[in-house]
Length: 62
Image (cartoon, rainbow, N blue to C red; front, side, top):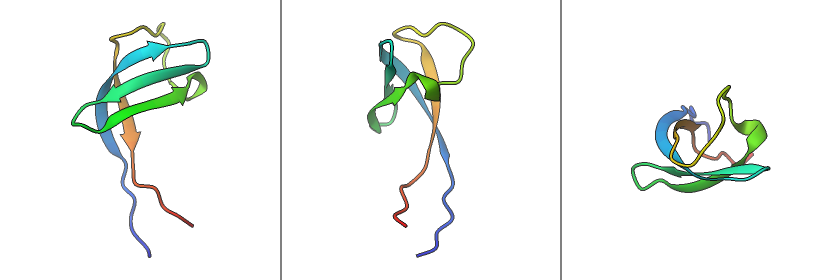
């Protein structure tokens, strides 16, 4: 199956920040994800309530 996977930009908000990861909620009933801090691109300190944007695409099994 060959599909063109096009990332979608989704807005969200930070729910929790720990020393290792960030938990964010995505708008549009897309759910909650937790990502390692090394995956967050920013120069400012992270805090609860900060608005974010995430690029998401479908998962392709290879």
